[in-house]
Image 1 (tube, rainbow, N blue to C red):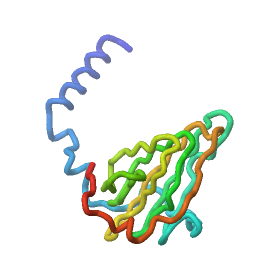
Image 2: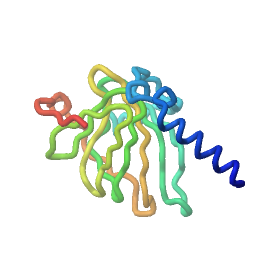
Image 3: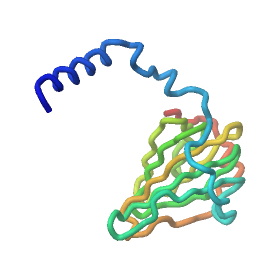
Image 4: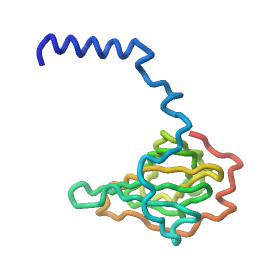
Length: 168
């Protein structure tokens, strides 16, 4: 890159940083848009989900990347069963409002833009709130060590236990 091009790039970056009209504000980024960014996919298996949820595989596990990724759309009130991941899980909330809970801890309210880290071998669940759908991208690392171990459904009583929710 020539010196002139570098000067031009530096000037543009400076103008972008000092001109607030060029930047997105948090209010614009976190608009009320609740539209999922991926298609809703296939119906999630009823044996592992309560309510209606949809799953779209985005990255199939393989021996090169050893990571799986996908998108899950939960309709209001839908949730996963209790489950754990041998190598943990990362959730990127892409739309809506939902809940996440690690066994023995308070329910956490999650929203579009939140990043959730589910530690390895820790029992947890996640799903939509009662009044809003919620979608997230899931990332499962080190799939050669296993992907998910499903447990029992989250009871209606546990799901409704928002006495002291933890908000992100």
